[in-house]
Image (cartoon, rainbow, N blue to C red; front, side):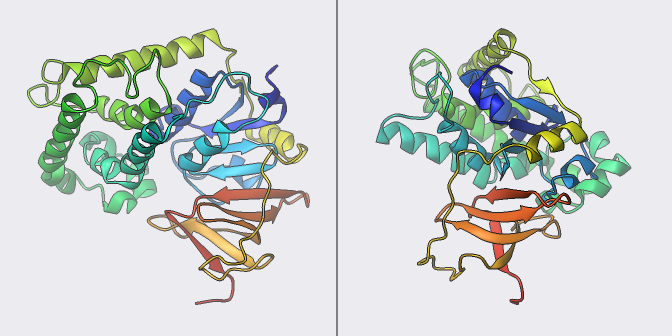
Length: 329
């Protein structure tokens, strides 16, 4: 792993068909950032993460040194400013383009798109007992056959309108990429990763196809080809098992992040208090607990001790997460 960023200890905990994992892997490939990969099972438990320890159950998880990042929104923000990378960032460079990029991020992740896409999971997959038990309550679903079949029509109509939205707006003038230019940027990743996931579902061709939405399908083909080319031309990720990944992380220095607690934060949380952080929407029982060392408008950071008494930092975005002081109701 010759890239300086890899030497600093970039490790991605991921499984191959996670749409959010593909989002981060696409960024790393297009940017040419080397990293180590610790492959994870599709369902719980994930003992590799307990070695750090991290209780958050969603995938992917990105680690830089001894800084652990939850949620791909935060991961990509951090990677955009990762030092030691010779290739330029993929993000927008002017306010108008940045506005488009951020709106795409918010809509595709904080909006309803993933929940709608979940409604198109093939019924036979959703009826697997292991899947049903592990994902129970995810996206507000029981994953029962009747529930999926009843909601499928509405989900298909929403997705059809989503494809039409891209076909008749940003791609309507024949541009190859969302922001123009000669190759995919962060805005393309924000827009494409969920459409790429949806395209892998069993979609009826009379509603969603290359014939009906030629510009969208051609753009997705270009995006996939660009990511595949970047992956094939770069060094393949070094694969680490859970024990090796944990040992590598715990003997690393902290990453490039610096932490401080905003004394004027409206939540009234104070530097050094014990807090829990966890997702606000699902699997709220999977809480990470530690000393508050960083708090800003869009990020919270806690310090946690490993079983070997090594301190790590866990970072999460504020949006979509709860931060609760221990001892409060």
